[in-house]
Image (tube, rainbow, N blue to C red):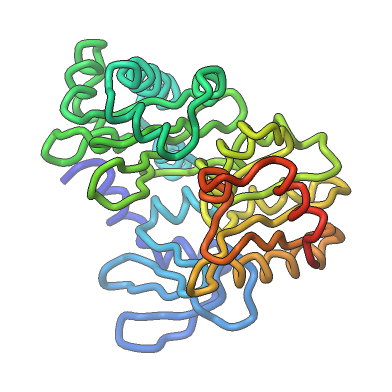
Amino acid sequence: MGDVERLKRRTPLLEYLRQHNWAGRPVGRFEFVGLCPLHKENQPSFYVNARKDVFYCHGCGQGGDLIRFVQLSRGLSFGQSLASLDPEIAPEVDSSAVLEKAAAFYQQQLDHSRDAMGYLQQRGVHDPTLIRELGIGYAPGGTLRRYLTAQGHSFDVLRRLGLINARGADALYQRIVFPLQQGENIVNLYGRSIGSAFAHRFLPGCKGGLYAWEKVRHYDEVILVEGLFDYGSLRQAGFQNATCSLGTHLNDAQFHQLCDGQRTVYLTFDVDANQSGQRAAERLAHRLGAHGIMALRVLLPHGYDPNSFFVGGGNAEQFRSLLEAAQP
């Protein structure tokens, strides 16, 4: 049994939650339900299975084991979560430094892949200066492990960071890669498949705050989008005041960032067939309004997101018109 499994055996998830004032009522032999500690809610939707030692929240969609809960609740990386639970087994590695090397390696691979560059062109993100600024790279698969082990990083470290899977294969395969930063440190990598694999993939751990927040926090008006290609399209069109939440559900750190000053937030989520993007925007607008933040919903044409709007021929002037027509 490894150190991580011993740690989880020694500190069951339910016991940890109760030590941190979580109150759950039994709804079965091994299952408990209570209010979610990860987001505000009035109806209990946070379930803990004491036999499997895992949790799942039907409200925010988060789930996992003890270490995953610590990561989410405290905004920590995998290694930092281990250190907080038991300093003696904390990995003796600077995870950010390893992720920096991985990101730099993927950036080098981008120039050598015609398919990856073609995909970026197809998605409308083609400005070389912006691509370099965002640190966009490409994970061909089958090459990162060899590169990083040659740099002296062990299989165990790469596995712990999620860069390789249990079989030793690269976790990111045929994916455009965006590094995600918190402050000066890379805390995660996002991979967007250019093939038939599931579109979105993050490494385990914290996704950090709002994307590129330090560049936009001083603006009185901020444009919030769901995805990184949405963000890239807006930046390329000249909108410097854009940021990205990496999905429609904001973590606590991202929400607090939006509320850290007086500003207007333009919620520019997808206008999809099932209306999930617009429903999420409406909920977020109410939450922000309750905290004194003016939130306006930008209504793109039906079936569009910001990326497809620009790829489909939309221009900056037309997008500004949509901002002007935004609704509370």
